[in-house]
Image (cartoon, rainbow, N blue to C red; front, side, top):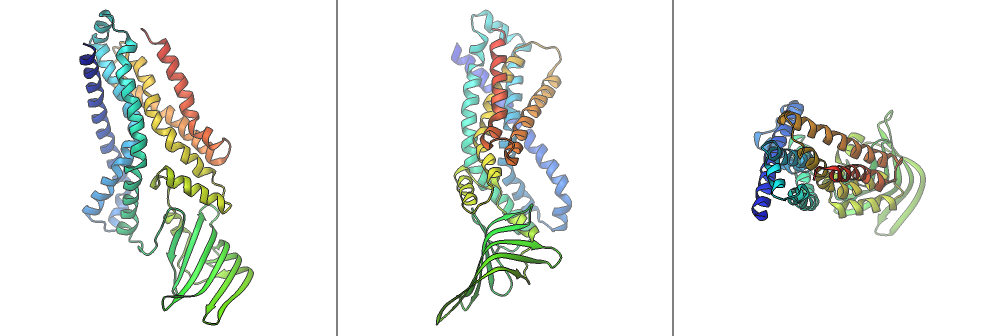
Length: 361
């Protein structure tokens, strides 16, 4: 009997989860399309480009909205059983409410694990593809501005190539860069720069801590400068800000390597360290938030599904507010990055366990 009942509860839960996920995907796509429609039109993007952009956006939307959908699924699957007295019938047969919610809790745990794997595999790849379509096909940025996980490599005027370890968009400052001038497939000159600061008045970069190398058949000539001005460049701050790789484009290992690289060049890496811990903490929100759904759904209400939907959105909003606030405080250094990433889960996990303990048996 219990296997049949477990399958019934799980199937009801998964059906609602699927419908809620698809509804949020449609909602997100429509809202984003309305917001960016003028950009698509101004860039003369084709229907195929727009379709592929939003196709690659779907994994990110699913991962982002999954906790809300998990809460909705637990509320409506158990709530419908409570509304039609199915919970009372099961409890009258000697089945405790804890036993009834057990399959949902087990399923929520495995979905959390799956969300973590999903966020480490498909989501970063899809985000890279989506942003590549946005940058190179819609906005028509040159593809010779190649990127890897830890730096930017851009082609400048005059056969010059600039390799950037990290760009600080807030300060408009480049940390550790090398500029090479290539002629006839050979490096003629190279500048190794400790930092470059954008000077808007002269539209140039002020280079600080420069080692200039001139390479020739007779050998290498090295000259050191405290500062130099880098002019006649098409490398602008707004371009670097757009090209800087984002945490959502990297999986855990790639982001961890990025953090290590930022630390090695003396950059404050707290922002990315908080994002790194969020890659682990966020998937567990799918399990923790269900701890609220089961106790709330077990109470028979006459208010109908609209109130249940509003309640799910309210709880999810407060939960995300805590998660986001902790992340921002971790970015700013007001909290340890790991504490900032996990504080929302700890608070809501404790609250959810208390609600489960107080749930009617």
